[in-house]
Image 1 (tube, rainbow over the protein chains, first blue to last red):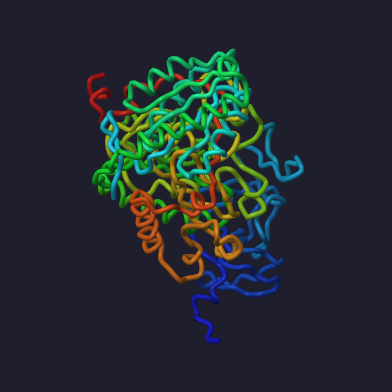
Image 2: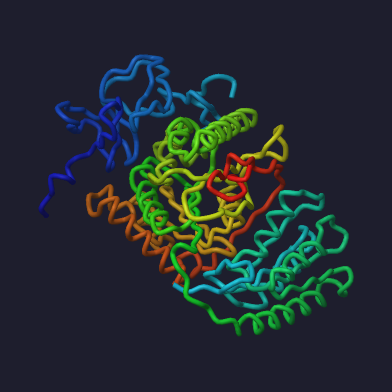
Length: 109
Length: 402
């Protein structure tokens, strides 16, 4: 089967200002994907629709997607890492995961 | 497109009989009346509470006089506080066949179910004689909601529904987007799209109200499934949800049950006013769908990534699936496959056109997937709202006069 170039692009950059890209399909750990001139090595298996860090992100730094801040890093995040509940939090209202735990919760909310 | 002309000038794209329980104690009897009818155009709606609530009363009047509703049967236990005579008079005054059964005065369960079946049969034959008339896109009211969102919702289905909204607004339809609790973080951008500075201030205020309300409750408008699908925070979900609104100017701010005064794009404020009472603003997606319908929505566009299956009583729901993997798992439930955008098989504009076509199709009588499968969910609970101020509808005669 012929594989089209577009099908091989695993990461979507939604805005040039973003420090995360979105997985367009499920990606395997160790695979390399290009965003602009940067080559990003995925650090863990990840499903479609998740966020991957494009650069080192400092603890407390804003996570930027769609060109807008969508929360803050809760620890240093390495390029290629999945950015999710265990390394970022909301700047508005804490996120509650299944089972009542509030991983990455910030503040009293 | 064709519609049933109602006395208030609006037209309906369906001609259903609504069977309405006015307290949970009348729910079973009303449900038995509906199931005995075995008719896709006889729908069950109701309010479970025994205590009075101005919001629920207003919503029920709007729903029972919705243009898709041709006739109404009210089912009361007898001792609940709902103003059944006021509702009956409002429906009858709208030119619709309307009947009331009070279980305590009708001989109890069996006899009321029998009387109810006879009443529905009678009303069905009355409204079957009404002929539909031609209807224009400019006479449509369309709502939009997202449910079971994931990381793909904001990339595919929501932007495509936004394009469909742009197309509908350009043709003069009224389009309503909502859930200010899922627009937290977007208030500045939304305010810049308002037709007047005073409306911009109202929009900013209503998002701040939502953020405060949800903070008190300790939960954002964010379900565990959203996180399973790659979304991490409420503001991230908001950015994706906001894409549903398209690019038109925002010409008004409505509250549940307010009818848009003309074509254009409206924001619906679903978060109650005043101190936090009665719990979460909307306990599930269908509560929001019911509020859109109470604002006159003929049909509701519903985007889902994780895979929602719901439909609604009164108005058809058109389901737009954002995630290609979900679509493959649940194709029977989905009207539109927006995941093709993610796979490079279609553009956002192409899927937007397809959604627009589905709206026109549904308005022309084509059944949506959820309608075909008998999904007619309905939920209405306690809330409290202040009326909207004059700055909320700057283009309406009422707004200009003030």
